[in-house]
Length: 404
Ligand code: BGC
Image (cartoon, rainbow, N blue to C red):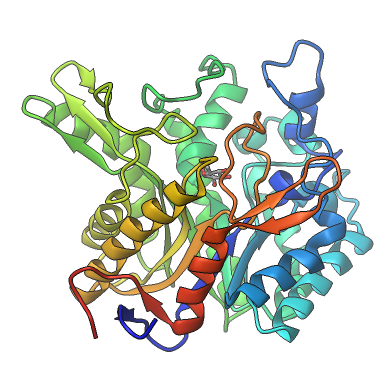
């Protein structure tokens, strides 16, 4: 693997997960309550998930052995503060051990402080709309200080604030819950006040981190829909992109980095979203197979917030066909290499996901580089994991155009 686009020193090359999707039995969280309530619209429960609360060491070792240099995981607020004001020292110690161990085996931990879920008490008190929501979030940030101090250099404050704003709008009863097909017809518009509250939460977290953990680089990670248009769709595309995405990207001005999370594209025509043609390849979530989305997402983000370094905090594909995963990721990494060659400052690539995990209501879509047996929890790296790990080891991206 001597060819390809050479990555700069310190480039993070790894994979991502989130707590609720992998740990299992997050009993005190709002998502657990949502999944388990009578008549829940959620098709499948997270249950034991990947049992990663127990098996995290094995997860990290596999990633390291595959050649990766970084692991993004999240800290579960509901475990740390299961009851308002009652902090679990045992949960904090757990995440401290994760950080220390990751470092000790040569994996740079990228820690997300909030990945979609909340303690149930926070949700019941009104979620991000509650008057004291930001104070509560800051108290949680105080509590996780030992985790950050254990050796975290890169912190994601809030994962996908744009998706979170939509979920919070739904939780407030202002939008219907999506049916099993998810949001394939495009994302509904989040409530403006809720979106602003989440931005304020991020700003408070940034100020908190700068004050308490001055050496840490911090930012948030945004779902990028790669919005495009055909003739007549300009205005709709603009309005959609502005309210579902760009307002959050702009709110990362001045941050140490912004996370780009890219999977597919969304195309507008004069009458709304233009679905992919019938013969277009789709992924396991029904999304268009469109690896070029990543390069385009990077360019769009760099244009909106020039000077803010970027980390690809998620990119991947749900599929049972691992060759398709390699094909998709090759295309995405080529787009990344081209963007970097054009001067876009990208500091890392973290594939979604390390493991086949709980896809918010479903176990069907498999995003993992590593398969997980649902009953025994045995982990089996897929060929795509070996392939991507080799790129991480070599410090090079596949690149059609650029051979160093
Ligand atoms: C989220 C992940 C999710 C992935 C695939 C992102 O929206 O951050 O939690 O599993 O995309 O849908």
